[in-house]
Length: 214
Image (tube, rainbow, N blue to C red; front, side):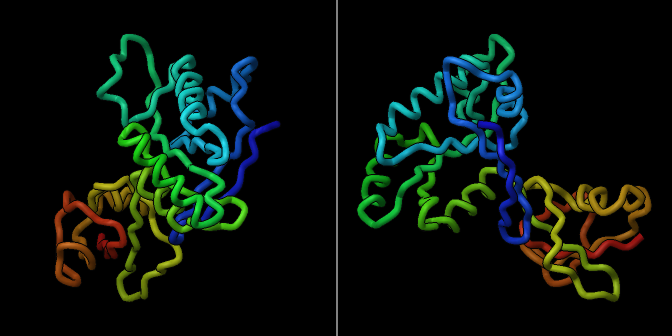
């Protein structure tokens, strides 16, 4: 009956998950609403053995009553009052076997583009890798690895940045002194040849390896 935190590792990125109590429209703790508004991503867990469309409608109504809206619907909603837009991912739980996957496919057709949705079986672990990748994608993050001059990179400890971040943003994440004192940067990864010299405003991609010199 209280929020329970846990950790989930997604490709060397540590993501904190908070399992909240079920939504109860009759009584809501103020701290619960504050938690939803501050989250980087809301996972709406629905029961595939129940009425899934009703579950989605009731959850959407609950969020709307508390001025919370899915980020992907930002263009559809006129913000005539203060609304908190939060990324949302629907988790279709109890996809325990192949027959349940067929029901999931039907649900995707019914929902269309209204909700981003991913299947999962919390009981058996089916689709867990797909579930983790969906979280990673919805968070809009990427992993960047540091290559200290003359040393091997540590691929177990990536720097986690917003997707589309630049070399300058990476330098700031490493240490604030690097931003002012940065003399050069070399990148191994997407769209460059190995060890290519790049500027501060070079846009990085997930998995890039960066060497900074000050």
